[in-house]
Length: 262
Image (tube, rainbow, N blue to C red; front, side):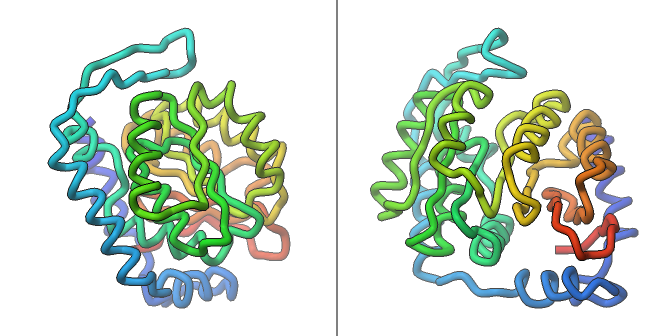
């Protein structure tokens, strides 16, 4: 897996377009890269989020973290330190800021998140606006509880965390957020579940919904899923940013698959 990641990163650095937008002929994508990607997030809010991360990195509690794998029938429970989870699971500050910018631009009527973990990415999504509601799902009850504590402590009142297997919980989430502007998938790094979630989202959402998928180059399996999503009939434009992939379903923009340095 490490060899695969290194090779893919080398390919990305060679093929990625400039972050300044040079060579991008689509006005929509050019505007996204040159304006949205450069938007500023309130420094005080970022400070609050990163203080929460630092707190979690030093949290020596051990919890029973449930892992649903590809479904509830494969559910496993592992004892993990919170500090270990904080090192591996949350998005980095760099990509957290990207989520905040995308939420500000496309959040619309609400945001759905697959995979709350400790709530770091949830905070970045919610930081776009206090009026923007974030509905996040977490399979592990213990992690969901810590995420709620972190969100409350940091003052994010515009978030609701649902606990349980995504396939079971998603209908209730869609009742609360029927037409999300943004969907962030970061909860199950396997091909079949990712494709299943993508299908369910596109069946429910409008063409203006933007879908962000984390860890598209995490493994060969995830990269295969990403390639299938890129070629889906209802997808017009995708952006590969190595770690994250952006999917656009909207009409009126020239179909293409972009690789952009971020």
